[in-house]
Each structure stands twice: as structure tokens, then as C-alpha cells.
Length: 594
Image (cartoon, rainbow, N blue to C red; front, side, top):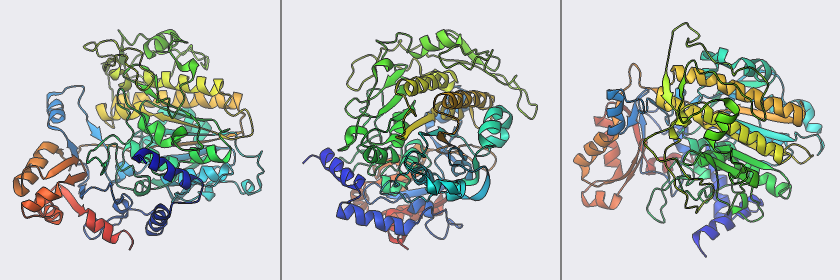
């Protein structure tokens, strides 16, 4: 039996609630160990934090887990050089830590069955799936460790019949959206505040309860309702012990296979497929496949599942992309059926912007004349001033003229040419405008929300993350972008109200992580320098893979030099003043059940 078939068989029994013995015992032990949502321990110097324990997977866990001091960011020498030279393509902000700027995120519920008000109690990303399951009349995913946020749900929901549940559950992840953005950039979110936040439930204290705040990790946590130690997704890349390699968790590279193989547990969408015999329509879109698949799950990869619509809106071709072995690319989403589908053609036709020649500036005027237009004269945008009065300006190209114009790659195993021609458009709002239109077209064509079987839609505002990385968390570009987020949410809600019904859907707005810049008290840590320091002390080649806070060691080679992983961790703690602590895999394994 091949490895892929074995994994699919194990997942199937998990979905059906039977449970393969070893997997079930492991899952139950993890649930008992971690509880519903264990938070970070107070003193990181004295014990292993709960957030790191929640990362523990027996085969994929790194040998060393590193906690850097606040505002310290790991980067490459090449990126650091770009920063020093003022290169506009440099990465100015990042995420992945356990600190509040990365782990405090917004969480808003709105719609059918949801109370109104602000709640001061704690919530976690892993609580979203079980809460939606309760609203949709479903059991939560078998491995879920989150809790139902009953304080957000109206009491009458307990009396719902099968035809009372929301017709659609729609989840928006505002990628790299810190919780404080909703205050700092509040005037950019005017519609969202008035029509969604004030009429829904807002959790004031929403945290991420695991250490790796990264796209693949958090989207699988949202989709499954459980911690990374159970999903097996510990980073955007992961360790494969069978091959001793570090592949992408979900291969969404240019010609990536977009396989959910590495996701070890079911998502809520997978559960709905089983419960409603694939009558639930599942739609998931992101510029990155890792976000779309982490939310939607396995599709036809697992027995009993069907080919849900799970698409990466591919910057390599400017078109939707998928693996048709497991998911569906509808005909109306193919450029052969719609020659205006490619991003540059779409934006020029419906928004009056030629991304091939024009720049994105703080004064760019955008008019939406597309099929889902709200009929407004122009999309709102700031006038080059922050809310506190400071002026800003910017000008950015939306294509890379040094690259060839890409081919029409849309399906895995396609041989069309790819390039990074459209990559700069990811750092501007027009990619998101195009993506929202594609989502609405799919919802329209698939008759989402038109019967009494609940559907699920996932949409990732991925370009917000790209803007934050490149321009920083307090940039004029970030502030400007939130006006487009607000417009897109208004556009989507208007469509839902008109086509599904004002009180027939439930909406969730959240984020997969925050971000930070290097500011007072922090510093850039050059990864090549750190690796060189460690290998100078313990021997060349002992670091198999360095992934920021996760370090994998060649323990055999380390042993030949006369050292252990504990020796490396102790030396790092004692000699690197930008660290809080370093935890070995054996330390984490020892305490995870305490």
C-alpha cells in the first residue's frame, strides 16, 4: 500500500468517527493534554509555553524551537541588504512569533443565529469551526479541540430544525490583520463597522493558541478547529521524515500539485460533505493554495468526498488554478470560455485600470463597473493622509516588466509558461478586487445558498499580507488597502442580502496572524550569521534546516562531534542575547502531557 493511499484510508476512518486506534489514542491524549485553547505560559524562561506544546507532532516537530525577544525578526542576508539599500522589494515586516502583535487577531460573527454585542471573554481561532458546526446542525470535526462560542449564539438556535440553519456560512480571513488595525484604521472600515461589527458579535480578546503564526498553520487551525500538533501542519513548509526533506505543506508553487496529503485531520467542510452526501457546496479561494486548502480541506482526496471548488488565484498566470484530481475548476472559470478572465484584462475592462502600464498611487481613482458593481462613482480611498493627519504618498508598478508575459496555466500538470510578471500586482488592491469578483461569480453560478442544505464559502484576503510584508504595518499602503477591504466586504454582503436573504447566512471575519516591524528594542537577525555561529561551535553541517523559530539538526553528525541537541539549545540560551529561550523536542515531548 502506498503512503498516499494509507493516509487517505486513515483520514476516511477519522471522518466517519470510527477512528484508527493509534491515531484516535493520540488525538485523545492531545485533547486531554492541551484542553480547548491553552494559552502561552506567563514566564517563558521557566517552562515550556502552552503555545509550543500545541505545536508538538511526534514526527514533524523540530529538534529545537526558538523564541526570540519581541520585535526581533529573522531575515536573509539578501533581504537585509535590500532594506539597507532602500530597495522597494524588501520585506519590512514579518510574523511567526508568540507575541501579542502576531497572536492578537480580530474575530467577528455576524448573521443568522448570532447575538449582537462586544464580548470580553477569550476566544481562539480553533473555536471557529466548532461554533459554525453548532450553527449548521453538524458535529464538529472529529479532531476538534476548540469550543463552541455559545456566548455569541442566540438561545433560540437550540430549537432549530433542519430547515432553520443558515443557508451559507462564509468565512473571511484578512491575512496578516492585527487586532489593533480595526482601531488604528477605523475610518477606512466605515461600512464594516456600521453594518457588520455593530450588528454582530465582536470578541475583544481573540488569541492564537500556538507558536507558529503562519498562513498554512492558521488556515488549517480555522478549517479543522484544532491545533497544529494534530493537523500536522507546523509551518508553510514541514518536515517529511519518510523522505528527510522539507516540502511545502500544500504545494502551491507555480506548477504545484495542490495536494491536501499532509493535512492529517478533517475540516468542517469535509464533515459537511459527509453529512450531506456532498450536497453542500464548498467554495474556497485565495491567492495562495495553502490558505484555500487549509480552510476547505480534502475534497475528493478522501473516500466519500467530492471535487469541491478550491482555487489558488495564481499570480504566476493571473488566473484561477487547481489540481483537478481533487478539486474542480468550473468551465466558466477557464480563460478559454472567458477571454476577459485574466487579471489584467478583467481589471482594465471593469475597473478602468491598465495594470500593465499604470502605477498604484495614493491618489489612484478606481471605478467599479463590473458584474457585481454597487453602482458607486468610485471606490472610496484616503486622500494621502493618515487618520492622525500625517501625509503619505507612494507609487508602485503592478507588473514586473523584466519578466515574460505568462501563459494560461490553470491546471496541475499544465505546461504553460509561468513567470513573476504579475507578482507586483499582489502588492496592490486590484488583485483582491479581481479575486472577489471571481468568488461572487462562482457563488452565482453554483447557486450558493439557494436550498436548505448549508453551503460553505471561504475567502482569503491574501494580498493584505503581501502589502504588510513589503510596506510595513504602519504604511500608507496598508491604510489605503483597508478602504478596499471595506468596499469588498460591502460588495459581498450586498450580494448575500440580495441573493441569499438578509437573515439566511452567517459570516465570520478573522485573521490568520498579525505582524510587526523591527522597532525600538528589536533587531534584524541574519539567518546565515546565526547558522554560521552555531556551526562554528558544534560543527559544520549539523543544521539540517533552519526555518526561523524551527531548527532541524543532523543528530547523527552532531553526535560524531560529541554533542547533543540539548547542548546546542543550552549554548544558544547562554550566548545569544536576542533569545528568550530555546526548547528541545525532548523537553516539549516530556511536558506536553503535564
